[in-house]
Image (cartoon, rainbow over all chains, first blue to last red):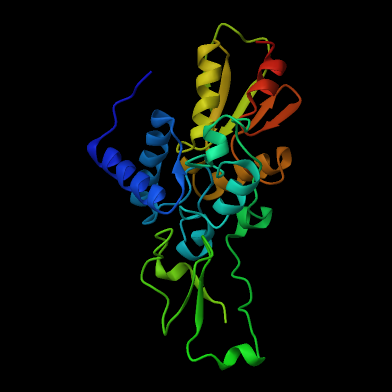
Length: 170
Length: 93
């Protein structure tokens, strides 16, 4: 059954697909399923002001939900282990080729976050030689991209996550 | 609690679905039930708020401590996630 989706959903789908492919990721090739998830991302954006994961219960507080804003902090580990992210918006080559069983995967997000939201881990403190760098090193918590510059980039050039999703790494 | 009841010809089992209105796997679960005429009750937890949501979350966590969706109760068994094989087995479909 093919559903009709509004133009803004199709537009975002095309944009996410392009960005994913440019960065070496794949959107789920089941177009109907994926369009449903993209529509849900827009629903959550209208509801909360950000694109919370469609398959997780958001608290509606950006700080507490920051780990589950799409793409979530768990995506890459899930792609590696299960061939799909938690909601199956992003899938691996093996998943597409049918070398991995298609179905929902276990939740990796710590259980306590379900009730109280994301708990920011303590910042990395390094007092050794490495701190004598001319610039701080920033790490994207979504995809692990590293860069050395005075401030984190406005948008991750790899996974397009926003500035607020970077941490100071060194 | 505002559970919605979907009538179906197959009411052999008591089926309760805790879902999110935005979740693809929850949607697949509903479609599996609907296409097999399963009678079930469901709630979209993301559409609840306040004390009502808290109460439902408590119930979900009793069945599935991780609090993930879909959480499906079929008689006295709990299925976490869209595990089609297990759901079919429990529903005998």
